[in-house]
Image 1 (tube, rainbow, N blue to C red):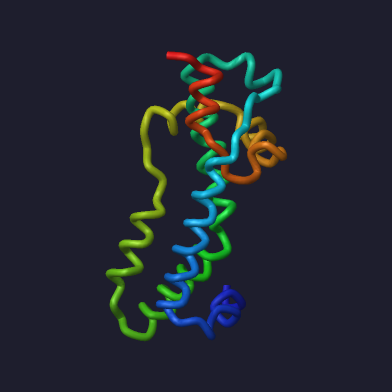
Image 2: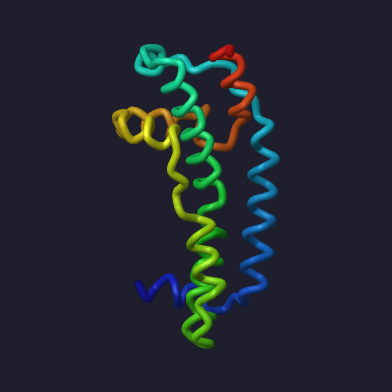
Length: 142
């Protein structure tokens, strides 16, 4: 665990904060990227609620993947600051902000095979952020 701290030791908290915000903005712009369909036998067999939950999860994973490097850098900068100052407030806030939100969609996702969701998540269409709302509305009319 020491290697990431040492690797990120040269960055200030403010620099890391700016970088995570800039990367998040870039990734959010990518959410305009259209995906027109999910051509997948497993996905086709899901109920409408399950499809909604899977699309939400695919979108979440794509955003997480897109921002991962900068979020890790900022996390380590927060750990470094907490270690130097003893002030854990910012670190606790960051942990809270990045903790999973439980809800109906998460319950549904947990009930489905992780390997199938992961397989879709790593496919070309869903590896990067995409317009999940347009896809949901196209595939699952209310």
